[in-house]
Amino acid sequence: MSHPAIDLAAQLMARRSVTPEDAGCQDILVQRLAHLGFSAERMRFGEVENLWIRRIQTGPVLCFAGHTDVVPSGPPDQWLSDPFTPTILDGKLYGRGAADMKSAIAAFVCAVEEFLAQHPAPIGAIALLITSDEEGDAVDGTVRVVETLKARGERLDYCIVGEPTAERRVGDTIKNGRRGSLSGTLRIKGVQGHVAYPHLARNPVHMGAPALAELAGITWDAGNEYFPPTTWQVSNIRGGTGATNVIPGELDVLFNFRFSTASTVESLTARLEHVLDKYGLDYDLHWTLSALPYFTPEGTLVRAAREAVASVTGVEAALSTSGGTSDGRFISEICPQVVELGLCNSTIHQINEQVPVADVVTLTAIYRRLMENLFASR
Picture 1 (cartoon, helix red, strand yellow):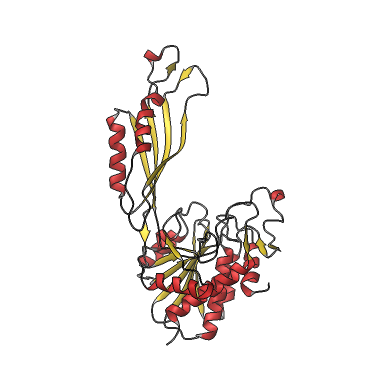
Picture 2 (cartoon, rainbow, N blue to C red; picture 1 turned 90 degrees about the horizontal axis):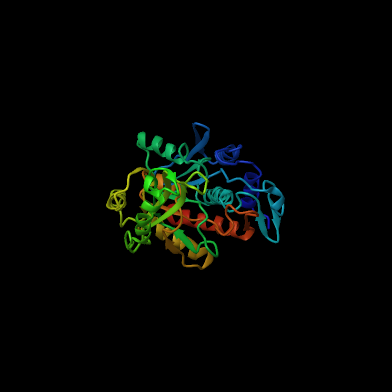
């Protein structure tokens, strides 16, 4: 199937933009949209290329947000074809970034072109916020662009993040929020010694185990009508010297909360530290807040997105706040209505990442319909 969005997706996928590299992808977008009256502002922070590109128009602002960086391909010889040589096999587009998320960027750009061809004077402004730091540390990407826009008083009314949200078919799931992410680095201190003389040592594994078991069994909250319950997971434990006859002197535990709006950072940290203190542990604890939860209630943007999906596919999109974090957490600082709507996520970050060609065409039609729902002149 030949379609402008497929051609553009392939052009972007051929660029080896492994995070935090952009590899010229943003140049392609600037050139593609220049003739439609979009003005581009490049924002480079550190080694990260960011792009803020907007078509000046009165009325509310709709922003499409995405990232041109991709994760490493893994062993190329395990792919059906070179991961940076876009290849169509059996109706599917293969290559790194096919699903996450260069095809969605291509779909949006082509949808904008189609929409403006039919509605050259829409009742709102269209913008793109593109970063090359979503798959990496995410410290010099969207968050820095948002800080810049916020400092000069620019706000958005609606934002569509093109992350792959579909589970079985395009449009079946719209993310209208995400949980927060709070990580902890815990060091439980003991006294190193010989295993034959435990009375001369203090084993931090033994001391910490009851506290960790209690933490693992806690129901932190019940969630609410929008979010699943908060979860706490240990991601790594390290202790000992590697010898079998040495009691370790320290135990390091890495853990993470994925938390709903039913909890706060303050309530989670206080409750966890209370458990550690209850067991009389000697410990150091450092917290890292990666994201606060955000949520977009059903309103103008959610209705426009669900209607667009139904109109194009016949599917009634489910609303969800599950999954990891996204750049929506930053954009919500300057935009009251943020949703994520993209392709299927079943092969993202995998060997042989792929997306059906027909899905890219469908997503393009959904995006165009969504813009018509918001901005088509009456």
